[in-house]
Amino acid sequence: MTPEEAHLHCEAVSWISHEFPGWVRVRLVDVNNTSWYFVDKVPVFTADSSRLEARLPAPVHILCSIVGGDDAALVVSTAPHGVEAEDGQCLFRVHPGQLDRHTV
Image 1 (cartoon, rainbow, N blue to C red):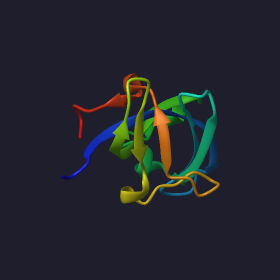
Image 2 (image 1 turned 90 degrees about the vertical axis):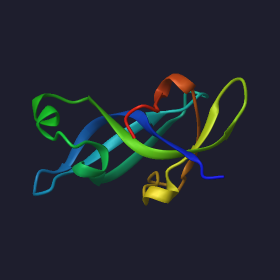
Image 3 (image 1 turned 30 degrees about the vertical axis):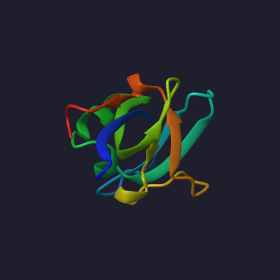
Image 4 (image 1 turned 60 degrees about the vertical axis):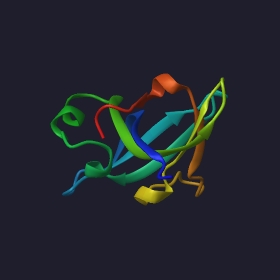
């Protein structure tokens, strides 16, 4: 069975570089209220870079695969899409409301 894909809601918190295509630092807060940070090119997190030009923090997303879960949280992996947190972590427990399953 293929894992379901979804967009995981996060927020861009700072610019790393404005040089094309732009690099940003993004924060994800998991079910334990732990903050995870990702640094990558703007197109990894949003197709509309113009909304990042206005003011940070700004809503963005990370494409992920839902790989498990229970009544309290879903487990998602960002690894299939080549994205990992600054410490190398790619599995996260998140609230179901943090996912958009309709836009993938």
